Image (cartoon, rainbow, N blue to C red; front, side):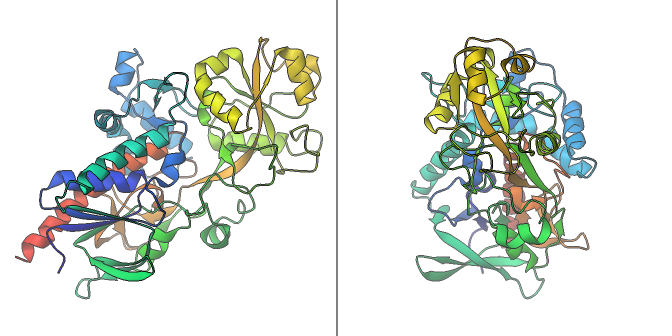
Length: 471
């Protein structure tokens, strides 16, 4: 029998950390074991760069921005192309302001707002620069939560155990009701079993490994580069389905339109994300002729389709002058920001991209035309006059998996029959059904907090109920 309302959380990204913190907050008798297969917590959440959405937040109120949960839900549903679960979208949007406030109360300074593609208003929250240096939003959020967890772990209460470099290999099933009863994992070369009254899967998606779920369910995008870390291999899907969990929307893999092409390594299969906020600040996309071809604030799937259609021919595919026209990805565009757009985005973040060799500067239209190797008159029809430009080359990349474990508004993992698997919960990219055919920018971090906290609450209540029945 598991001890005092024990819960296991598998996955140490934002969803997993949110679940662990919320579970510990719910009841004093809750004991949480957090397993992370990498050496540190964070996962793909740490790489998120555009921000976290919220409607009717105190930040919006302070800046006089009028928004509504209804409008946010409409934007999310429209982005999902009619495939999103209404009840999941309602949960996400209704809890969004509370999710942002929770992070702010934990110490994350989410005072900057941006309007990203597919949004009706500015509702994507991120952090201000400090002394001219950017504060990446994903890294800042997971660092803050990690510090709170570390404090609880080192406090000596015995209520939290964090195990890194721990690969979950199987969920343990209760022989009586086929619910979950624990997990088997490999750490430091040893197999260990932990009994649990409830378990939360927060293992992320599967876009980081082409051999596996991506090849099986979405072969149409398997050849693209990715923004995901190699750890995103769909572990939670394998664990869940072995216990009878159903899968949904597995063929729906989001291709982000803008992953940076590094001139020194154009064929690297892993790309650094060119944040949505670059276009939200006014960045424009041009083909190799210097022509603008898309509304940069459209949804990700439409911008991706436009790049593929307009930037794939030998004379329209963008590339760095240091590389040959046949090198690099099959479709690529120039991303250009004027001085005004750069000011809005933040020079600390741009400087970070420059240090990585992803962004270059050009002083004036003439110098920009030479750098892009395009006709200056044509360029002037697409880009406004400025004293300084910032530019890079971008390409579509696999970014996010909309499909995953079927779940409900209580974060319970469901079987094909619609019945929940007793004691099994899930949150984050491991789940499916929320985003439909296309995730709205900024909803990933929000999903992790909203459903991570919900999973923590429900797991805590379920574990306490089970423990009480065993007394």
